[in-house]
Image (cartoon, rainbow, N blue to C red):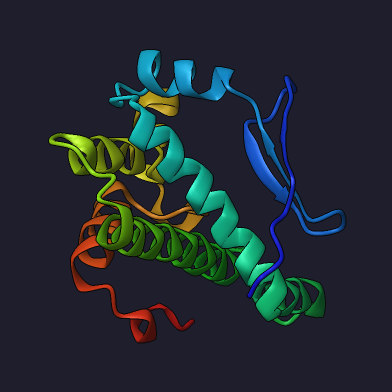
Length: 172
């Protein structure tokens, strides 16, 4: 069984993150207001839980050594920024994958999903796609600068993992 990282509510200039050094998930609840007002996402109890599950996915990556491996690649100096961005995208999509598995297995066990919950999670995932953020903030999209994946990639990761439940599909 994996250790449970503490979740700390805070108000900072950054939104949500998992601190690999202290194994704490930091959650700024104003992020969800921005998600809704600035990016047009549906914010529901389930979409908040889904975002938290994504951050817990990063905690799982930390425990499994994935984050350390990506950091080694970053420090090696052998890869271009565009190549490192692709690694970052894969890491973020894997955290989405883990969140989808959490939703699937938690619903199988406790029947937590209500009508509209999956749409809300997909809306949140799409809202933070790099293409959506770039289009809204700078007016154009640069795929080489993606660090979190496109809206379509994030939507697919949420939807497919909620429906497949196959953990073997999440290996980087």
